[in-house]
Length: 298
Image (cartoon, rainbow, N blue to C red; front, top):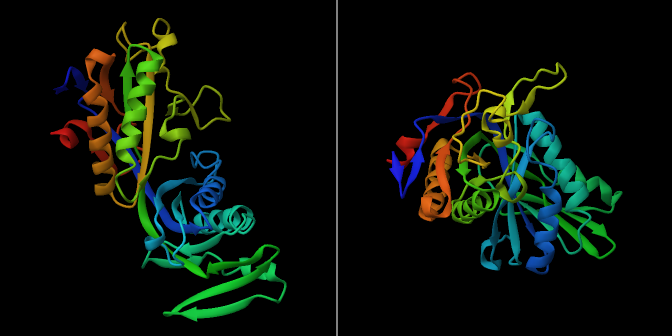
């Protein structure tokens, strides 16, 4: 398959089951809602070392938030429910409770309830007050700039992590420009995040390593500087490869995100140095969710 001069490899991305939740952070303006959201989703690129994968889903207008203030929707993904609950509560306590003018609400209906502000209320040292509105429990916690309002729980649902595709280009600037275009397009798709910095990862990995302590190591088959000394998957003109990883609430959500992202890359085309689109998989051994590139783009 070739789209605008870009070859779409006959391969698939391989993804695995995760647990996920969404939270809504509001503040007196978008600037402070975003500051809190960025802090809460920091150091959360990969479950390999971060404990969770998190990202900003989208900015919310005042008419989309529970308290009528500007807001930001964030999503957190983890390998299990216990780990997700721990990451959510720790990050909320350190990054939202502390952030000026912030409030915190559930962003997902249904699923299994997990603590959001349920335990953060204890920071109020006995001065906190519970309110029940519309069947939902909220806590008002006194803080030095006024009060911190938080919903007690949010929902945890089944999700999918690790959808991905690789952009192969003639140069590093061309690969990055293509990935930036893809990320901008994918941000328009609901229920997904791209957890790596700016949505892009340059250190794609393979399972295992020559060093026993490492569970993952550099994907040498796609490293341009190793073309002469490893079993490469790159042709001579490829000098840069970058990867976009996608987590989503459902397989269909990731399908949609991959489709618009790959199309954005192909719109730039071979004229802008983009040669191939590929994907990372481990022969079907990593996870049960397979995203076949040519099927997605058909």
